[in-house]
Image 1 (cartoon, rainbow, N blue to C red):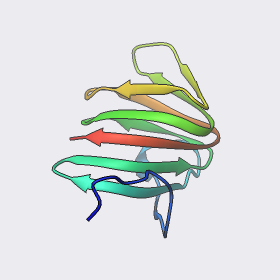
Image 2 (cartoon, rainbow, N blue to C red):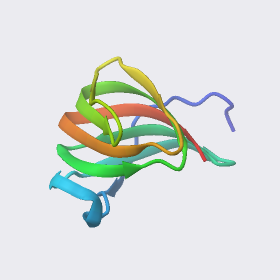
Image 3 (cartoon, rainbow, N blue to C red):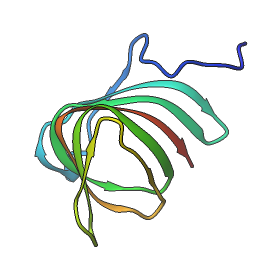
Image 4 (cartoon, rainbow, N blue to C red):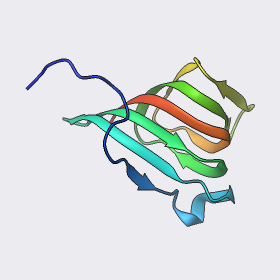
Amino acid sequence: MSLILPVLPGGDPEVSRPDPSRVIAGDPVHRTWLTEEADGLFAGVWESTPGTWRVIYDEWEYFRLTDGVSVITPDDGAAVTLRVGDAWVIRPGFTGAWEVVETTRKDFVIRL
């Protein structure tokens, strides 16, 4: 087993949608390619088609956008527009809305 892994989409992704009760607009479809899943850590590539849904983070996430445009709006703050190359950390306890304006792809690391 290699100890160095590329974080690239490959093979068949997991396809999902947000919980219907959280969808605000559109019909977003998510595709996820997991590179790593061990001891509460997940890393890979995530992609979503346009739409808006409520998000509630119980986990810590680092991500960098590689394609598209999204807008994250915290319940208690101003909207943040995310563009290619932007990197962010979302901490546990964040609640708000995630809007995919243009199909968005990101590399991510999640820690439970």
